[in-house]
Length: 434
Image 1 (cartoon, helix red, strand yellow):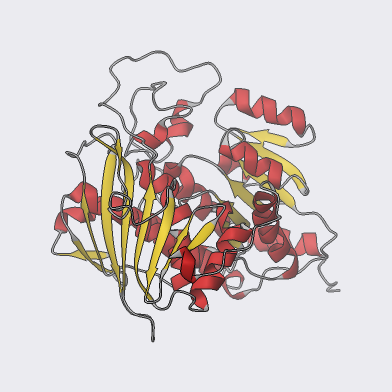
Image 2 (spheres, helix red, strand yellow):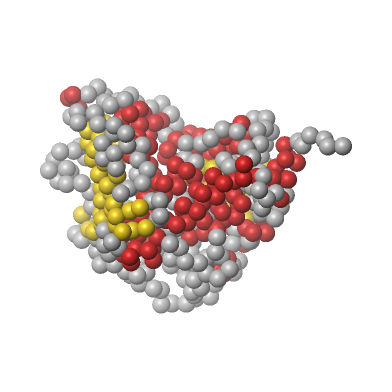
């Protein structure tokens, strides 16, 4: 006799049917909002530890970390959770509903694709992947398996970002054709490490490298500075691009750039640059005009912040990192927490948010959890955030290839710049391809 499946049985069978054809067309299970999800967590410290905290309303049934010390510390807070060093072993469990990924950039794709193909919903830290081809692969697999996904661009859930999007979309400053985005953070290095100390007790160095080529361990890589190295991260662009370029992508309905050109210091084959400027050109979207977006990162020689010339001419108020929209009727200057319409004499002062600073992160994670339970969607699903991540990563590919890119998003080809192919298509260590 065929009895109806309960939710857990459905998800369990979905996991083992992931290799079959029926799952690709199935809808995610809809469950009671009061029933808690069974979550597996890949990465347990630093940013991953924050993710773990913000999903702790659910059942944390499995923890995975390549560092036994971090894993033991997380186990103290979640004593009932099983522990794993290798995420592939964790995914063999039959009771996991969803996966949270907080690993370094170079392992996002291998963990996300495997999690999606096992039938699980996925929350992944930004950027979605390490290269353009990986970001496209993840978004395609998410669509194929019809899972609920969310990129860890938690700033997307601030009230301030939402208000800026509303202002731009209702045309307060008119049609926007020019945007400037700047971040003064610096992630760089001076060359390959020369010292070769032993791997710290508890760290599985082979698993930490994952798809990256084997090389000696260095404390310059782990635990904090891996973003400085091309093999593991993408510098300032990869760290902050998905946060700051998210706002113009969202407000102006941008998706793929048609071209990108860059300038910066001499290229290092190993380390990300101290500063870089990238110029993206986007096509018109219906009645919306083409957009030119300029990205500025880092600090130039003489400790001068790399940012728009409007600051030097006195055309803007004193501001930290931010985004400047230039429209037909005026300008909008924003950061994570505030915005101002310019010239101020022509516009009313924006309202002051009453939302607490710590609310937005929990909301971003809870949006994903609610969507899993109700069959809904998220605002930073892998379709939207995949295109955003591709654009960010394309900026780095243009810089590393030393030339402008005329971009064809349908084929992932850079016309007129064959060297860019090396930085667009991902190269995997044997045994780690996706």
